[in-house]
Image 1: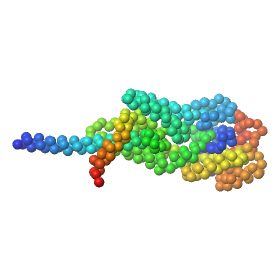
Image 2: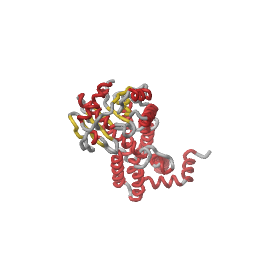
Image 3: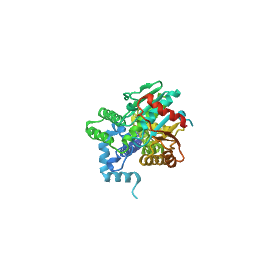
Image 4: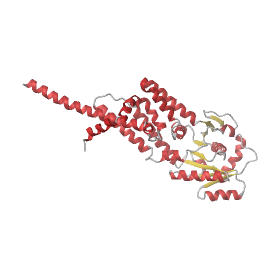
Length: 89
Length: 292
């Protein structure tokens, strides 16, 4: 019985902390996307007067670009993510 | 304030009014007063080699006692910087994205404001971070556009601060999930830029910095001079000196007085001979001393 309780405890701990980890990873990813959006804003038609300075960041964040492009193009996923995060009205 | 008390000088003005000549003469004046002085040309069509009558390159060259001159091309500086970024990109990025990113980096050369920011970088390096001279004179002034970008905190400083905050937050979350976060290069770059922007702003706003405009007694140079005064004052920077170059008559002096009533002036009469070389430049230094 004690053993079984331990397993149940572990299960819930795992479930909770895992979802917390997911949330944090997700939050970090959203912030990384925001940074890329600022650096690559010209691709979205928004002028960036600091483009000359911000290209210096590309060697360090450039590997994320394909994912960023996919997410930018996939409106539905952006919206559904926001819904998931904020909740439907 | 005496002219020689200013530690950094920028001279603006329409092409051909004699910015390089006046800068060179001012440099000579500072050096004669005993200050180790550097005259910097940022104009791609360099003319310091002409005014000092000796070949000047991108390394400071000694002209006479305490006087040095250098010619730096911001276009070349921009290319060098972007090539460095490209090299870093090739080292760090996956082959999947590299082609696209190299293009992006090349395009930054043509992005609005690129050359102005490259010029700002050169000014920062020469006058702030690697400063080796007591007096530094630039034969160009940053444009109204650059000055506005550098001096208004909302435009640049706040922007960098927000990006830094954003990056810090992302790194914090990554750390919380146990990812190893070493000294982040993105944060390092953003913080360096923020520092540069702040220090450039305090250089431009410093009471020890002189921004002057060189004019001739003709409509076009005067109009452009007036526009520069207006643009700079809109950015919070006061033009403290007007140099009337090639001014011979009282009428011409009056014309300039009338256009810039609030600003201190120096007048230089036309010379019989083109002022090339240190000896002939002394003919101008004489007027710089007399008039203030």
